[in-house]
Length: 156
Image 1: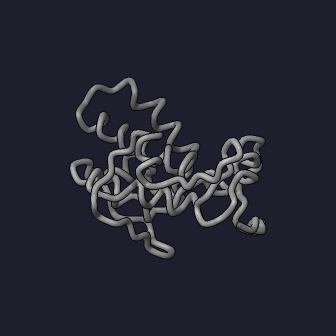
Image 2: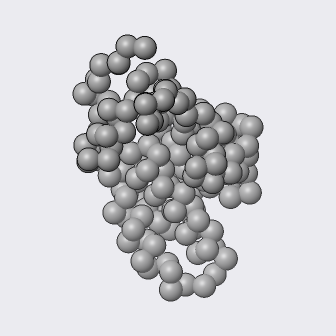
């Protein structure tokens, strides 16, 4: 298997661990782990991270506008971008409240924060508005194929 060339347009993180992981990637979903070529599957990702996934495929809009949402109004006010720093500020403030609404907002923000920092990180600490509909309704958020989406994104 030939080693793929790294396209610098897609390399957005450059810490030591990420660089080592990229060096181990051999293409087509295969990594060189201890001298063996191992393909990371959706099932592997589900088990490693304990992600609950459903059957509904996640399709993101190209360049979405900020959705109309009470949740977004509470957390991101009228901001034009969904910044990681705003998520962290919200979490600090809301942990002192004890309502079912704040507990649900904490869950939504944590889901977005994990997406923005671990699974789909960008060069800038923000996340697309396109992810909001997938976490808005917590009862249906587990029906989406998160493991498939994340695996495809990581391999890409």
